[in-house]
Length: 428
Image (tube, rainbow, N blue to C red):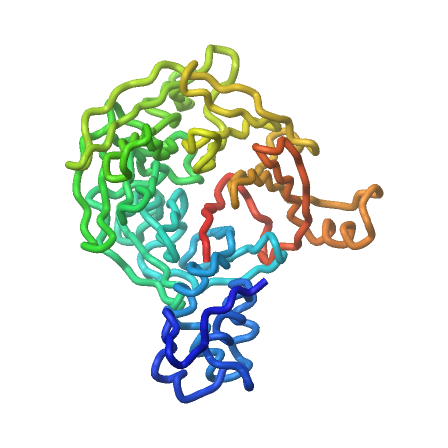
């Protein structure tokens, strides 16, 4: 149901229509502020289809007014952003799971000297999307086939459908932890290195940590990690304890990843994966010293940390819940015992060593895998989708302890490899 704002001439709308729309009509027979609320209920993934209806619709659906109105009316959609390949040569896509709709975004600006960008990180902050760092090849370096880390930062503006290049990180890096600090306009990056997906265990590792101020477009150094750590994940944990929000204590967690490597028979490099985590209490001055958390599992339980996601505002204490996908099992991290407890098993198990995606959307855990070939137990439509390479998504609700599934046909021109694809979520 659409909640209408007052259209009375004596009380102006809190979301004024811009000058160009004030002389035109969005929907004949309705005041523009009421029509604006109706149009704001259309899912973002469908905007490109209806923008061509009229000049006034195109202007409104491309305006900042729409974003403010959707936030006010709680009409934001939880969308998934997928980067199947190097975003400068292959378009990223928005996926709307509620409407099974896909929308391509513009590719990032292309640098003619670099290619093969991978191991970058994407993160959303409000209605904007950031792409940071990564590893690539540079035709200006020697040897040309040796990957180098990137310090570039790009931001995608969904209002203008435009990429902007921002101030670069102080240290170039790929395969690093990246965390958005809630309600602060800050992004923190930690660890990383220069590894490329084509180069196995080769590449550098680093311990540096930086914080980005979105408003100032400026990076500042923070205390580095206790040791070199690449391929790690990070998240923020708040500790309110019933006090005012400005007194809330925030903890920055960085876990997993790999440090130094060893060689087998003195020839083949093998990563040494971490079993622990490190934590920093963020104070008003930006940070404090790191403290180390012990090993989270014993020898023989697993070789490395699986894919990790965080569900914000979970449970009675409203603290984030951390989940890990390890093969076909989902585990939840218990901070008290510093261990991973089994949460559930994926109903339809993926083949061994196949790549799976793992993200959180609207408080639910999405386990994604590509389907190939036909299955007699499915409908005829599903069989057709599978022959074309359908995306099978199994969705777990951690509070209700229930599973559901959906099938969609992605628009990619090549098979999606979740081991190299980069994903993040955004609310629009």
